[in-house]
Length: 273
Image 1 (tube, rainbow, N blue to C red):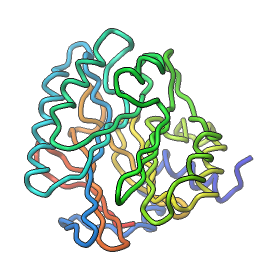
Image 2 (cartoon, rainbow, N blue to C red):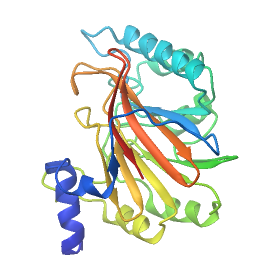
Image 3 (tube, one colour):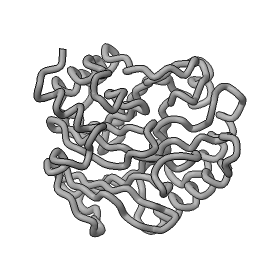
């Protein structure tokens, strides 16, 4: 059961994401510089390599060029590609996507999306880690949560695994959760991953949750002490009118983020959390 205040939040998330709740974050459209800890990383999602009638290879090379230039301009420490690396299933394209991503100038991590229809064993063999995985870096903990399966179903993710993982991570660095499928599955806010919401309630150490899947959403809102960040798309035939990625930076205890349209070189939806 979801209480009334939480239901209002959930309905607002997908139905009217820009109204009211965004006031919980501090917004501006000016550049934000990282100082202090030097934590700076990028998140992109939904490349859909192999989608018919799209220049999907060009979408990948455009992203790689943009992220390489980003790193040269202001160094990134790592990159996360948050699901749907390929389009429509187990057709041998995932190794090709990996070959592209292996040219990135910094370490990168991936989550499985509903279009990345390979087995857990195949995923493990290709990437060297499972579909649920914790990455402990010097100044951040990354939790990669699987929200699909080989059939391409949209799932909530393993809340038992997530809860156990969060019990073991450090509390001295920011914790970031990456899950391709949002934990609210529909615009009405009636199909909700209640067990994931309970984990978020119980572990305020999660500073941000990153979602892909819905290519039309590039905003962020605030829930409890976590920012919920939607990352649009860098490939595919539908979604926001631009293709881009998200930058996250830290200055002291403050985290900031924005979407970046790398075609027109414009920063979008800046916020501090």
